[in-house]
Image 1 (tube, rainbow, N blue to C red):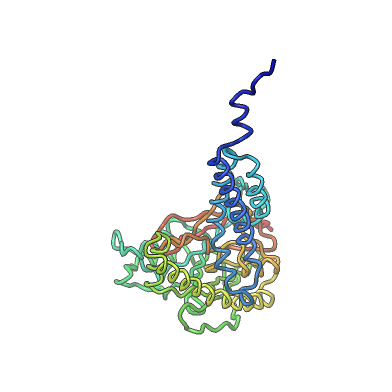
Image 2 (cartoon, rainbow, N blue to C red):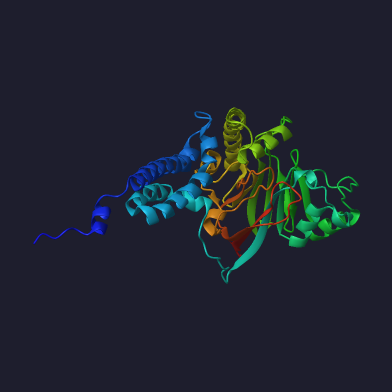
Length: 381
């Protein structure tokens, strides 16, 4: 007697048209996402002087990564075989992923070392971007004093004196000089506050004074009998005016017609294309100074105006300088807090007899940058 096949079995062998359509769309999405993720992950290795658009592609990496993770989860539930496609893209981009979002547990100091902290902070000229001066005191200086790091490297720092406009009080200035015996401002607006003896190094860098141009200074500190050369840098910015920033807000909110969005995207990409090659030239100049004045123990910190894995950071890696956050951090870190530009563009690098133990981000929003604080250990001679 002939038995009929179960209806369920037949349906399993012949999935519905909608199931097939979903599978095709999902496969296509996985392929696009895997390609986009991989390209954005390695765009930072392309010299912007040769291909100025590469940095703009590199900046999209977090978006591709989030999309890839979502697609991976969906694929595992709907069509597990398709997960292999996006999985390969995630594996291929893993070095950049772990640079962007490292997964490290806290490190502890050894018994025979000396620890010290370094803060890097673009202070926006000591203005409060929200115009909130509670207690009639400058919130940025107040935060620095309360955090009490051993060395503070400041970018966009004006001359330190009392100011009614900036709400800088004489008491704050007295407290700074009490906590930090060494207060130096070099170049245009690069400053250092230090509890350790520190002296400026005349590199020969000349600030051009053009809008958004780079600024950098060099200092040599003596920490527990060892010389540590500190380069405080501010690389070429995107030179975005208020109209550009408002445009970016609209773009991220998808406000406007297709034509308007395309025009906004093109305008902002052109801004990136103009600034990125100059940062390469700035970094080449910085490397010359590092080779000439650096010595074995070097810290480079500041506002790089560039994301993890960018070409300037790769150039510094060739000089045996390592980024601190990828070695000690956990999860992604955002260091710029204004205008929806949510990127990590402030970095601390090191080389020599220094061991990074931690790096954290401050929460204060008086400046458009968050401060970042790294803890180092140095052999106690």
